[in-house]
Every structure is written in structure tokens, then in C-alpha cells.
Image (cartoon, rainbow, N blue to C red; front, side, top):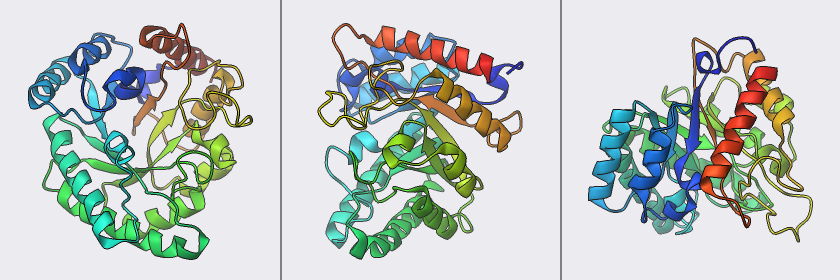
Length: 305
């Protein structure tokens, strides 16, 4: 691509993946965030929960000074506690909704313009349609509350159905059902497609993205290992690009960029956040090395797109 990548997207990184020691909302949150804030390659960052109010305030100030666009992800809140917005038990679903509502406040504190939310576990074919209705209702409640909390973009992130996260959403056809139900009433609802999840879903970007292109408002790039269940990196672990047995390489990132341009999903008129979700997992891998690897992939993929 002959034009600057920054004309087409906000180039982001997921903070709590690049620095997994802070994924639980504790640890050196501010110190690690500062490294991203001081790196002018990135123009956006995706944050998770920050439990200490002083650290959250310091992080918010750092983000404000940096000029980075901020997204806030609920995965570090919902996944460890096994909370599900489509839980068939009303009490359990209410716990998940309350956790997201609290997350909206944290996101507002950090100056986030968008929120990333996953669906809960898939209950199986017999209960799937019921679960989808519950998920739609949960998102409607969240979107109504979000209007009072800065009115951020609220995106449903698409995960795998049967390998790792076992998420209700899930295949892009099911994501389309959710989007069709919510988008007419909520302008700030959208879908988030992650390049690393296409292999896990056994779907192809060129087939799946056109299906939901009217609702796609955010994107991730990343890698996964899925062909050998005995591999230490098997599943949705977000390993670096170039890792042995990885499914996503630089040419695939290049083709993803090309597809997004061709579909009109990125460009000077839109410039959504496209974040890299990668983390150090193997001996010798550090956050700094993983970030450098990722930036090289992004630069080369865009130059060749």
C-alpha cells in the first residue's frame, strides 16, 4: 500500500496481552503502559481492568498525555470469573451484566472510546437460540447504560466455538443474528473480528467478513496454533507471529489489510482501531521482543498490501 497505514486505521496493541503480568488488573500497570505510551508507532491501546484506584488514575493521566485512543476490554474481567452474558440462569447472567456495568465505569475513568465484550459459553445446539436471545437482552441493557457513561462504541468480539473459548459467538452467521437484532436500535453497537480466530472457527476472512460487513467496527490481528492438541501453544493463546505451527503469518496479515480496504471497512473516512493481540509465551520471549516482532509484521504487511 503506497499510503500511510495511519490514514486507514488506528494502530493498536492490547496492553494486558503484551504485558501478561498485569492481566488481572494488578502489578506494574503504569510502568508497562508507559512503554506503549512512549512508543509513537501505536496510536491506540486496549486496556483491561485496573483494580487499584490510584494506579487507574495514574494510567488515565498517562493515556491522556500520550494522545492514544483508548479501548477497554472486558475479557480479563469476565473470563477468569466464568461470567456469561448469555447464562441460562438469571442470577448468573445478572452477575455478568453487573460486572460489565462496573467495567463501563472503569472504561470511562480511562477515557475509553470503545468497549470490547465477549459472549459467554455456548450451551449447545438445543439451547443456542435461547442463549442468543439472552445475549441480545444483556447487550441492550449494557448499551442503554453506556449512553450515560460517555456513550462509547460497544463491540461484541467474535471467538471460537469448540476449541478454546467455546463461545456462543462463535461463527460469523451467529454474530450476524446478534448484530441484526441490536444495530437498528443502537448506533454504537458493532462487531469485532479477530484474524487469529478465523482458523479456530474454520472460517475464511474473505467469506465471513462480507457476511457481517455492515456491522464490523473494530479488528484484531494475532496468531494461534490449532492443528496439534499436544502443542504447548494449542488454542487461543495469542502467540507471536512466526511461532512454530502458527496459523497466521505476515502474508495473511497483508491479505487481511487488503480485504478490509476492498470491503471499505478501513480508510480515511473510517480509521477504526486494529489492535495486535500478542504475548510472550515461550522461553526467551519478552514483551519488548514480542512488540518489536509485531511492529515489523505490521510494517511489512502494510508495505506489501
